[in-house]
Image (cartoon, rainbow, N blue to C red):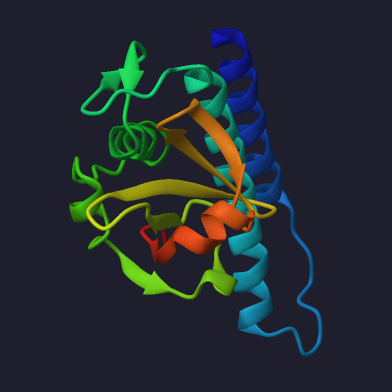
Length: 167
């Protein structure tokens, strides 16, 4: 698993180096927004690789309320650890406090790395990380760390909000 992570990190670095070293003449009429979209796409690809690597590390870890390690982890601790490990950003420990970070975004505007929040009961909330293609990574109370479809009937009915932390 460590070798897989090293290969992925080396691939990301190579991808960044290759894109940084490329040169081309400006295209007539090329706008700044096109450049931003291209840069944003590269960053989303990097974030996607980092999050897939995190899933490889945490996959199979059981859910444990209040848990913070491979023996058992809850949803907010998983998000906190992944954000610190992948993006070097420290998030609060609880779902409630995480739901106040960054800024609200429309579900239709989700990007890789955005947080998705759910109201699973009158008093309980749940959080996951959007990883693209309609999928999110989270610690399920019944199945542990897993990837789920955001728009399946259960999660669609429990959806509460999305927040962008990464710029």
